[in-house]
Every structure is written in structure tokens, then in C-alpha cells.
Length: 74
Image (cartoon, rainbow, N blue to C red):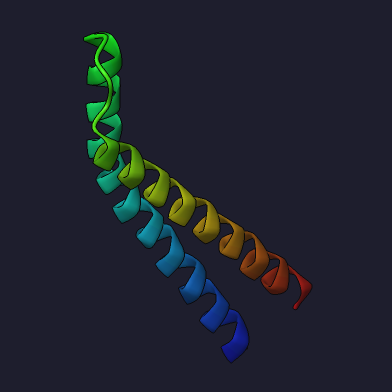
């Protein structure tokens, strides 16, 4: 029973982490969209931040899938 509660807490923590990272990613995404709309080259730092945050989100989602699978098997 403790293992299930622990897994549920970890899943909840990862979901919160994703929400926080998405907020950070939104800032760089807005800058990228602005550069596209104004037909200018995006600032390289915005591109790097977007890619970094996107990778972190994908990794967290994968971890949630793994934890959910483990929880379902209990």
C-alpha cells in the first residue's frame, strides 16, 4: 500500500514539474513566434531554452508513463 501512495505522489510531483516547465517554455515560445511573425531570425538563446524545456517536459512525461505502468501493475 505504501508503494502505491509513493508512486501516486511521484506522479503528482512530475505533473507539477511539467506545469512549471511549460510556463518557462511559454516565454521562449512567445519570443520564437514573435520572430516568425516579424520575419526576423530568432535569438539563439530563445531557441536553446525552448529546446531545453521541451526535452525536460518529454523526459518528465516519459517518467510519468513508467510510474503509471508500475502503479497499474500493483
